[in-house]
Image (cartoon, rainbow, N blue to C red):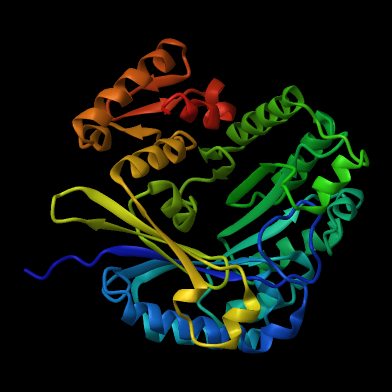
Length: 391
């Protein structure tokens, strides 16, 4: 019998932006100089990594998700997109119906028609963030509220029935009435998927410098908790499943690719400067380990020569590392900790895990089902704090 090929996901980081948002700490550059050669550099890395990583599954894997993130992928023109997708289709094995997500900003809504007609993209992730012009100016977004609505309409008109939009809460001086207004605006369009994030002050961002200088005052934890509670109540009334702390989907519209990261089991390949890859190994002694590789965030070096060891950092994760990462991610999801996976842990980790579970169950923060230990609705916003109890 022919062995089953592993399923995998592919992520491509497009590190170009036309301007840096105030809150952003992801690797991106506003200089367009390197765009001309970027697609060829990505395809070169893809070809090398498929053939040269002997311990990785990329040559034999079947990819069933592809995510173009950034940065701002929609700064690419349609010719670049066509060339990229054509090259990837030839380099890897693909499932019959992969989820192919493209992050798009509303100011680039004219690209939507070309993506639909000339590429295999079947899911759009739209960085709305807010429908209010004053908030968009504060975040240094390059679109208006009207343009955001036009982009959603255009996606629907072109037949993109798998659409995700991003919104941000926890803005300075934001109250529940403003947040409710944002959610009701979204409700009128009923996107199949919604990602909602609390604004965080990331070190190195413009917002961090502004807050330090006293220009803005961020809301406290009580206000954030109230706004998150409003979000979860609203999504439940609208029929969305809160399947991860910040992600909500109508039935059948969970993000397949993002779920790879929370699984800590399915391999994913990351291409481009700043992108991460993950794949598991099984050593001769039977211990489960994994490799995580992080490409260096340097687009100049990335496009200037052959992809090689100088372009990435790599670490090996032990079984204990993988267990801790699984706990941290699983407790952010509605699925929670799977009993089958816990039962397969080495005896020392399994014993420690059960000991850590007891006070969380007694305190009403976790609930036990036939197959899992899941966060209660009251504990959803405290998911990261729940994970700390296991360390």
